[in-house]
Image 1: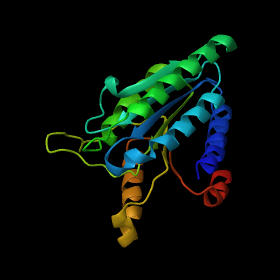
Image 2 (image 1 turned 90 degrees about the vertical axis):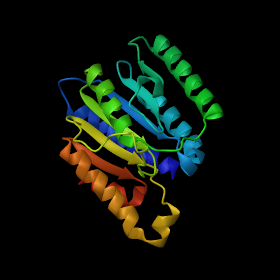
Image 3 (image 1 turned 180 degrees about the vertical axis):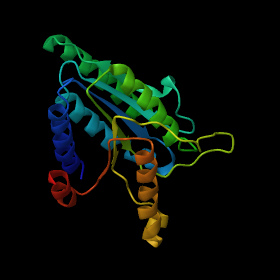
Image 4 (image 1 turned 135 degrees about the horizontal axis):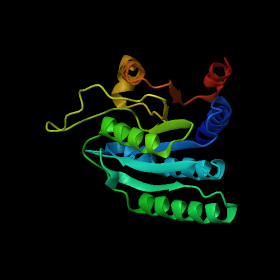
Length: 216
């Protein structure tokens, strides 16, 4: 499934470069869920990060941050870079980026809660600061947000000019019992993201089903 995700991401990133003539640069902020059982999926995220490093061009920006109990913090950014116009320097940046994320994968520990909203707010701030013509948040998560009693996230958020793509949204055991929970979770996120002003909401899981949708 990871290879299929690559094909869709390539199409999305390629379309992004053509869609905005004001700026050819783009910025991607990837959120990696490290909570509960989903922490076991992190190695798949490692492959996607390597793919992004091979795809993004000089002048583009990339950041990867973890989603944990509270994620509205720059301290949760694992690695970030705006790639130099000089190919040799950009390659140095990408190698360093890959090493930072690989180290994270080797040492990652799970968290008790899942603050997806906080991570999205932090991501939007990063993307807006880059000034990129196309901005994307990738969320590598089961999209099951769980907050402690003290964390406040039930307020409107702003995602204007940002595309949001949920990747590798695995099904929980409770989803297998009642599929309405899975579909309802994704619908709720779509409504929230669209209400926040995002330019697009996507879920990438099955390339065969998504291919026709992406070409429409």
